[in-house]
Image (cartoon, helix red, strand yellow):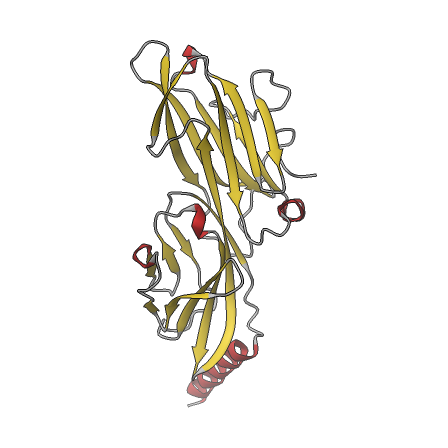
Length: 271
């Protein structure tokens, strides 16, 4: 009997903490590259998901994606959403439209509990030669600009967020060496206001099968990367830009942030 009482007391303490906001649930940051599938953890989940509501906010008003454990069918992207057995929110085929703030909210006996917030940051690469297809023929000698952008929330001041969280964006070559402004072949520029880093390069015939990779790091840990590969099209003096291969090293963080930062003198936004 004493054992059962202790269990009842523990359940009451957990329930009380959820309702009063003292559960100690922290914010989580997830980095992902576009085109990937992602899992957003619900760090305040109860024993089942019937009390779980997922909200999305990137602008002024929050939108319900899942209510009472049920996906809202009127949401445009509802077919890409599903609820995990642990009440996590799974999103397939991530796009740049998916970045923003997500909240896992619990309702207990009709009362709203605390929110567990997840910030989703999306890394995306595009090219000045890109069309609607995944491949574009480009000739050797053509100057190509690669754009790598981190879509993050909040976007009030990307520069302040990058500096405080030690976020870096940079390009590396096929050997894994960071490209720097001092390399005469590459023109590297960055815009910390919009979390963008670009590189412009004049392609050579020997660039066939070469890769350039954009990485995002926080606190010296790579979180996501996208690889841009140049391949020969089989025609003389022409190559094909194959866009892009995505790698995400940490999709399921268990603590407050997923982070990105490597190395020193490269293409970073850090100050």
